[in-house]
Amino acid sequence: MQGCLALEDGSIYTGVGFGAEGVQTGELVFNTSMTGYQEILTDPSYHRQIVTMTVPHVGNTGINPEDVESDRVWVAGFVVRALSPVVSNWRTQGDLDEYLRSQGVIGLSDISTRALVRHIRSRGVMRAAIAHGEAAQDPAALVEQARQSPDMSGWNLVDDVTCAEPYNWTERSDPQWYRSHRYDPAGPLVVAYDFGIKRNILRMMTDRGLRVRVVPAHTPAADVLAMNPAGVFLSNGPGDPAAVTYAIQNVRHLLGKTPVFGICLGHQILGLALGGRTEKMRFGHRGGNQPVKNLLSGVVEISSHNHGFAITPDSDLSGAEITHVNLNDNTVEGLRHVELGAFSVQYHPEASPGPHDSLYLFDEFVSRVKAQWMYIEIADDVQ
Image (cartoon, rainbow, N blue to C red; front, side, top):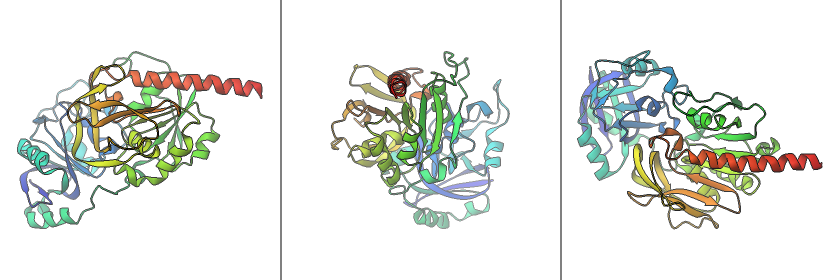
């Protein structure tokens, strides 16, 4: 059945629709990962985005419940060069077409994704409308829908993806993929702010013996401190970080009171809480092959990224230092503030593209948490 992708600049790309029928709008972006489309689809950070894959052949490994990063598909649409007609994988429990249909998400294949990605790189990410079925027959109307859709700048999308109630996370990683650690129900407590958190981030913490309490994004800092945590984690998430003003204020109240570790949106929110600024990137970083240099060690890490905003390099960060930079464009990829006990990275160490180049960041967080936990226990004994 006919499918169509219409961009706000008037560009039209026609192809074959799959998944759900209908029309959806969103910000058109591209991802350069060679594998992992299921993790991409279910990452809440892609909320309200139409994702184009640069790898030409997608869908051959099917769908399985072990690899999802949340309980639903979050992308607004999915564009591929070729949808595999054959699914072959020992864990497969379904195919991509049926999966997107069941989730109400539109897919589009038989698109010249190379030409589309070159267009985005030249013109920058932009609003778009993706259609499958009858609506795809009116490209002019789709262009107008794209132009009338919201712009990502200034858009707080965290409210759409955060959990409704606090919950405890105890699941650990499959020992086939990572060295096995055992969840410790008596271990140090970490409170994780859910701005759109990925499940594998949570596993990385429980793998290392931490008790994890996930809380909604709006949870006041006073309520978090009342739990007496040994550390606070700031998660990834979608949208413009500067629009999540309540999170920035909460982090300001937490700094210096407990160790803080942020990833992706959490990194940006930490930077804003320290007094920095963020800016929208031309086409962002999305993929599993970004080279990041650790300025503290000199080591280059192959890292996984998903962000369209970044901390402005000349920001006043109240004494924090830049610890990591992207070697492709010098984007700020890491921060630390020694006195306040906070650090963060823009990329995703839990995604393991290196494959394990960046897992040391979770170990560093655990070391800080355990030191704080010992302090808490000593203080309780004194009282």
